[in-house]
Length: 484
Image (tube, rainbow, N blue to C red):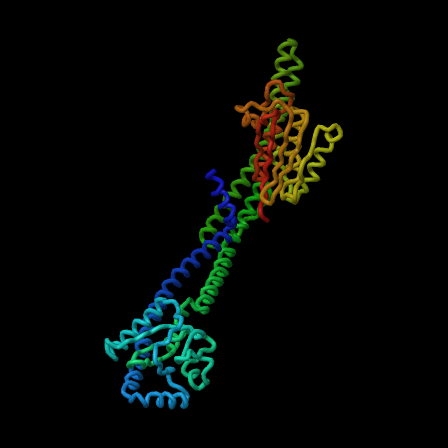
């Protein structure tokens, strides 16, 4: 059960080097930018809080000076001074005199609001006296009341308040300070915090910073993508050359390009290609020489055996020569069947299977299930011989064969099920050895499965055997589909 989540996670990861590099780069950039942004925001908030306290202190000192001025005026002159200030277009504050403190819904306290209130109360008590009754609160503009009658800001003449309390378009919180000057006399002062602290709580990450992070991330991903694509092109050429060489194609020397590590790999591949080419040439020459050299003495020995008068001795010599000739022919056939020199081309596997199964379809000895989704890039004659051997073995030893095709973008899989006795578990690998035949089976060279596996190996695939529970043998041919 524990292996399934890990397998699912592996499937979610990109398979290509470019995709994994881009994903890793994106995660690193997001993590780095996130950490740097958190640090930057923390420093910004600390700086803004310091500036907010300084601005609040300056505003509180200005307000305390205004309060001291009103306190110095005779009581009868205070309303006249307020009327004159309003007719002149307002002041920095909206000021009114009330006979009681106005009761208004206050805004929820936040760290910034609390800091401003604490600074105001501290400054006003220091400048006006600790015994001074002071109320400092933040009120929403919609809940703001001006006079004892409870008038709203919008119900006043524009020149009275809107010059000092410019609310459009931010609609910021209003700082309301009410100070008791005497019995039944409360000085009401409404004000806004100075820029850039008018909105008070607008200290989130600026859009410019978010845009800068997105732009730098995009540029870095594009740069990394181009770099990885440029560096992996030699690796793709190397993979294509290795696949073609495994199929026996004549591969030209690989161009040495890219980073120093890739150049070293390309150089080692070229050296390996030359050694393998020389080995294959020498092997072909060796088997040609063996074929030529052994046929002559075998033929000569047969002629001499015919001259023997002892029939029993003649029969024994003939059996030995037949066995020797069988071994030579089997070895030469094995080399000839697995070393097929042909071009690599797209193969219509559906058509190939139809051709191989056609001779047996009339009597119902073969059934076919599934189909190939796309052509396969390989050697047509070699794959025809490989699949043909698997079908012939199934018919010969299992009487009937059921072919099942399982195709995908990653691989082509052919399962050949027969109805024979199967193969003993301890001999599932031994049957691939040349000239190996199970006791009681029909005659032959014993090379079919070995040749099929060799051809599958040359295509980067595999042939495996499995005894079915209900009886019979399943032969599975796996051929990977390489990226073009």
